[in-house]
Amino acid sequence: MRSNQPGGRGDTRNATINRDLTTVLAVLGAAVEWGACEANPARDYNRRFTRERRESIHLPSSADVEAVITRCPGLFARMIRFLAQTGCRQEEVAGLTWKLVNRKAGTVTFLKTKTSRLRTIRLDPDTLTMLIALPHFLDSDAVFWHGKGARYLNVSSRFREMVRSAQRVGTPFRPCRCHDLRHGFAIRSLQNGWDIYALSKHLRHSSVRTTEIYLGYVPARAGTKTGTSITVSPG
Image 1 (cartoon, rainbow, N blue to C red):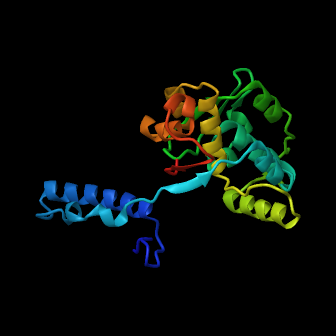
Image 2: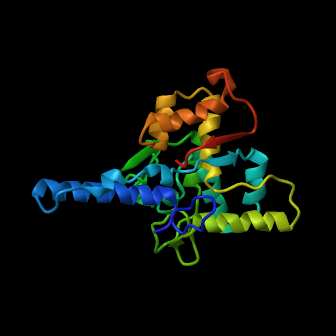
């Protein structure tokens, strides 16, 4: 297992290595308690060598997002718009089914989440209207589908293809990643007066400290950073 440190060729992200180390630490800790071994060498590993790199992102404007959406086929375009309007994670939305959409309450519930816990969010009226208007496929419960009702896979890769497609036709826009839609939603929400704890709950961050990173992009509230880019942790 190799890390992706500067100067080397890493096949594994440091975040993955650190998660694996945490698992090994717990297993060896249990083994020590049970008397199966005398020491836990995982405690001695210096995680400075696998420090997680924060990614520098540029916030996509509404025009940037629209430029990509115009190149998206079928319901993939609607799914990208849904991601931009809700800040949800890609896999959550790709796996969304109609039985998890509560039209009366205006909410959607996600089963496949990063934390493996149910996550329910409330939609704004425009997003709910867009969702309800989507066509259904008779033999599939997937909200966002293609072909014969199959859910979308590899959303990030598909999004990159749409970005390249927009670039090829000469559309004037600033390229972005699919995950930048989540960052953009978070910062716009704070700019529009969202409470940091409400936003953290909506995004389902493990800690509000992760959400607080976005405060650096809201000068009126943070009083510090301004500009068009910010360095954030993957969330």
